[in-house]
Length: 387
Image (cartoon, rainbow, N blue to C red; front, side):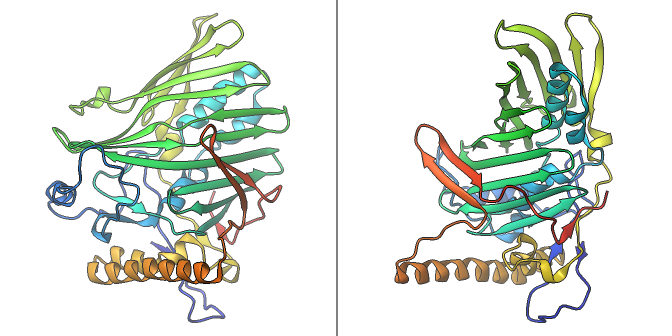
C-alpha cells in the first residue's frame, strides 16, 4: 500500500490510498479473498434470477479489492512496464503500425482475482494520473447506468486516447458475464490515423471450475489506412492452462479482405504475428515483460489531488479492507453511498441537472454513449506512476 505521508494543509481531508496493480497472472502481493469464498458468493447470488442485470447490485466490502473500477480502467493504460503505446508511433508502415496497435490493445484487458471486484464509482468521481508525458483523466459520467469516460494525451508523442464504456453484468446461474459497451479510440496525430476498437466480455464462472477470463470478439479498424484486425478471446470451461486466456485472429486489408497477418497466442503469456506473404513469425507481445513487477502510483502534489479523486473517495473503505476490518470498511462504504443519495436529493430539490466536469456526454439508441473531452489536452496530474 502506498499513501501520501506528507502533512496536508487541510487536516480534515482524507489522504489518498493507492495500491499496487494486479500482476500479469492476476494475483497481488496482498490476498483480498475471504475464506470459503465460492460458498459466500453463491449464497450472495442465491436470490438473483438467471438473466438478471447486475448493474445496480451492491457488493459488501468483503468482496471488494481496495480500488475503484475507475482506477482499474486507468491502470490498463498507465500500469505497464514497457512502452507499447509509443511503439505504435515508431512504426514506419501502416501495416507495422496496425501490428503494434494490436499488441498494445492485447495488453489492455487485465486479469482479475476470482471472487473480488473493484468499487462501483460514484457520480462525478475522477482519477487523474500521469506516467511520463502521458496524462490520463477519467470521470464517472453516469451512475445509472454506470458509464466511465477516459481521456489521455501525450503531446510530445502526438498520441490521444478517448474511451467511453458501460459495463452490463448479467447473472446466468453458474456464471456472470459482463458485456462492455462503448468504443475506444486511439489517435496517432503524427500519421493522421484513428484506431477504433471495442472491448471483450468479462466472464466469471463459478461451476464446474471457478474461473475469471476475458472472452469474445474484438474488432480494430483504421479508416485512414483501410486496415482492420479481428481478434477472438477464448477460454476453457475446465480451466486447462493451455486453453486459458487464448487469443487468435488476423489483420486484413478491408478493401480486399486479404489476410496480411495471423495472430495467435495467450494474452497472459506470449502472442505472435505471422506475416502471410513471407511466412515469418514474430513475437509481438510478452505479458511478463509488460505486466510484471508493476509499481503503485504515488502522490506527488497532495494539494493538487481533488476530493473527487478515486483514491480519496474510497480511502477509508480501502483502509478497512487492507486491515481486514470489515466493520470499518462496511461503515465507510455506507457513508460514501449515503452521501451520494443526499447530494442527489439536494440537486433535485433545486431543480438542477448534474453535468460532467471533463466530458460532454451524449446517448442515442443507435450509437450508444459518446463521451467527448471538453479540453483538448489533459494537464499533468498530482498522482504519478513510477517509470
